[in-house]
Length: 205
Image 1 (cartoon, rainbow, N blue to C red):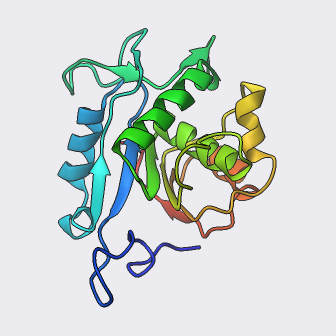
Image 2: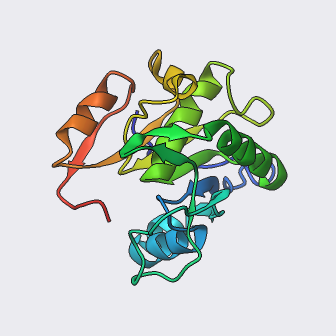
């Protein structure tokens, strides 16, 4: 399902005939970056026509970065991560349960949110949360996520509790931005989503 201008919005702001409020998205930043870094990336590069229609919230992940940041020298610290990877495999995570609890508390405190918008590691977490919430296994104390935007994401391979998110098709409307060179990533998602996919020629930036 494509998310067009009519469908991408929050509930009505007032009575009958009132324009809908901007859709509220919780934005989950990339690996060892920060909410402020993602805010700069989004508001500095996305068209104002898009950002003016959205209410974007940029929190920091719960864990301080446990290693070098890929954006050091480009963006100032501090840097954070949503969970830790196991060994050298960036798609096998630990501490995801603590990450999920942190995000649910954040959504309860600062919500309601219409959707999740994730980049890189934040995109991986967003996809898992959408799938688990659909099965009643995560985000059970907050409203259902209505939309998910995945920027340079991938399919998590561990822990098993997270991979259960992909046991069936995730029906939440989603928009995926995937580097055209990442064929393996693209194919891994095709069986899990019921949405159209658009390929772009830009890198993971």
